[in-house]
Image (cartoon, rainbow, N blue to C red; front, side, top):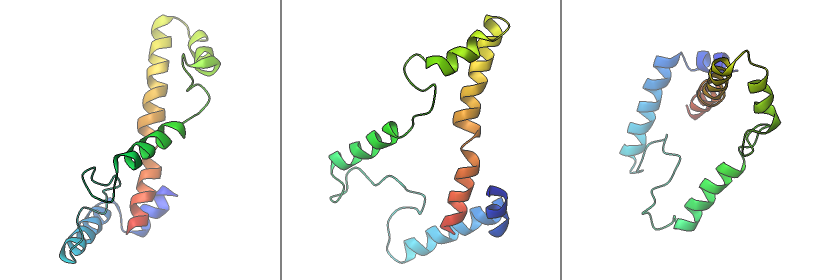
Length: 117
C-alpha cells in the first residue's frame, strides 16, 4: 500500500513539494500551523490541558502488543532465552525493538502523508 500511495502522488520528492504547497496555501488563507501539526498548541484557548493529557494517555493505552507488558513477558523472554548466548540475546532484543518501533511504522507514515495530499 505504501508503494502504491507514494507512486500515486509522484514519489517522495513530489510528496515533500506538495506538502510544502499545502502549507503555503494554508498560511495564505490565514490558517496557523502546518498540515503536519497533529498535536495542537498547548497554549491555545480551545485546547485545555486535560484534553492534551487524554491524547497522550490514549496513545499509551492503545499501544499494546504481546511482549509489551512490564518485564517483556513470555514473548520477549522466549526470544531472549532461545539465543545462543547473552550477546546474541542482547543484539536480537535490540534489533527487535529497532525494527518494531523505527522500521515497521514507516510504510504507515508514508501512506498517512500521501493521504494528506
